[in-house]
Amino acid sequence: MTRGKLILIEGLDRTGKSTQTAKLVESLNGEASLVKFPDRSTQIGGLIHQYLTEPDFHLPDQAIHLLFSANRWEVAQTIKKTLAQGKHVVLDRYVYSGIAYSAAKQTPGMDLRWCAQPDKGLLKPDLTFFLSNAESGLRQGFGEERYESTEFQAKVREQFVAIFDTFEEAAYKKSHIVFLDTTNQSITQVHELVHSATTEFIRKNAEIDEFMYF
Ligand code: DGP
Image (cartoon, rainbow, N blue to C red; front, side, top):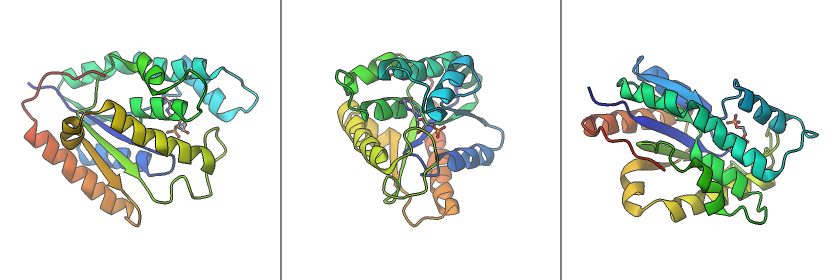
């Protein structure tokens, strides 16, 4: 039996990631499980939730960055075990969000490389969809959580672009990352693109058994 594939849906807030991850898992008919980051159900996730929702809950930028990373590490073994059992895992956010949101704060010393360091050694996705929308970062109507402002989202968008340019080789981008502009596309249209690219990728790479790591 070959291992399952690690599939990631990334993007800014309000680009439809959670809708698309849920629809993708459903359409894979029990062959995939969903993992969402941050996972707010753990103790570390509880602290992250407090940080995101309570303006008076203060943590240094470095500390919250490491908590987001720790939140990925605490699920890492479970993800690997699931994949080893031949089941696919679909991730709603992962390492790229970890780097982008922290680097967007422009805190002295917290450049892209510093931000990438704590996630070194985590499993690297086989296939990443990066969802962008001409309106995300510009539109109003964000929720109340920390980071949900037009100005900050514009900075996060710049960081995502810089991350894919800085850390990922052209060959990796070509065969492992799909950049999807969802402007004016319906949920169903985006789902059809994501689903067909995923099933095609799984079919073509069925024999690949080695894991990749950040
Ligand atoms: P979500 O539950 O997907 O809405 O994510 C909550 C917020 O946290 C969202 O604004 C994006 C941000 N976020 C997600 N992952 C990370 C991370 O690893 N580091 C930082 N700094 N922010 C993150």
